[in-house]
Length: 193
Image (cartoon, rainbow, N blue to C red; front, side, top):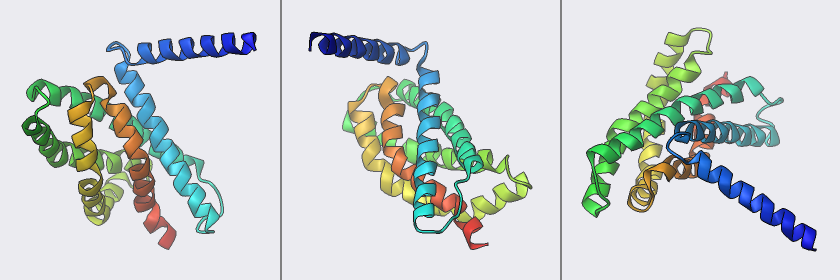
């Protein structure tokens, strides 16, 4: 029993040290990108598992998951820099400041994230420019409307309660459900063809 307690104590200390290092300013960009890549991959994996379970697909598409992971890479970089920028131009955690951040986030960052998503996955398409143009035309508003449902309540909590260094982590916990939906919206047309 003493050995188990020592092992658990050592594991906890290692975990705590790792988390403290990962969220230091020096490593925060890497941590945020890693989290975003992981959550985007997991979201697509869950969506594809669902498609397999309802027989909407016959095989798991690892390439598709890699493309979604790459979109998470760009989202991680954008969100990391966006949250730092927002906290520099709007200082404070009053309701007024939180609402200003929320409006800027929804009106500026959300469209950028959606457009970067379509751009990063279009890179891997046969005709990237045509694919990007078509997907933005056909699917942008679907995702943007969903953004207005999901993110305002989540971002109020994010901007009011959390320090900047934990914002992308929190964002990614909420984003898992949204990433599943994004994967479904992105790949819906391919299934119809």
